[in-house]
Length: 204
Image (tube, rainbow, N blue to C red; front, top):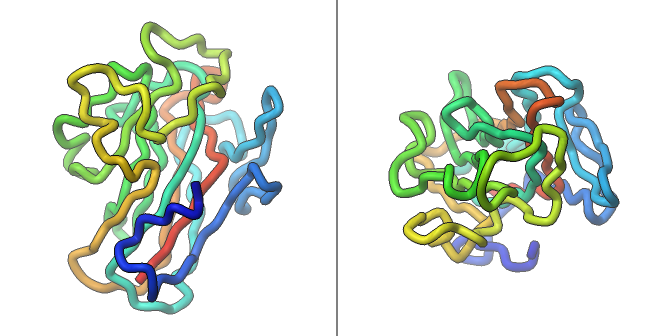
């Protein structure tokens, strides 16, 4: 998957983040590495609700284009972006949105036919590890990875972009801001969690 980089032209990109737990990488400081049923991933550092940010340095490079990818899994009854359940990629202070990887209760609960909210606009992917029905809060849904663009129900546009899980974004103006990635949930780990095992970011 990593070889299929979707970043426009090939040259001129600088990688500022690469976390691949499947090949044995450690999680960035601020996230914890855990395993379940033979699959390893990064998760929040404790069992409390909230957002847990990681900063990736821009290395002092001025950039206006950013591309990357994330892969994750669902644990429990995730509510979706309306309840702040997502992997958010931003820059600057106050935060300016780059891309959001939303997790949701089930596939039908994702709505990519319109903007997720005023903050994310249309720059997001949404997927669930559950095809239909209500998830079990104690279950790790590890057979269906998030944001791969598969298994969308009829009429849902969440799988339309063939480049998933890769995103590409050109910002309104150049910046040297570091890039922040936050794992967020509005309930404790006993109820829900987003688990991340692959993250890559490039800037230009």
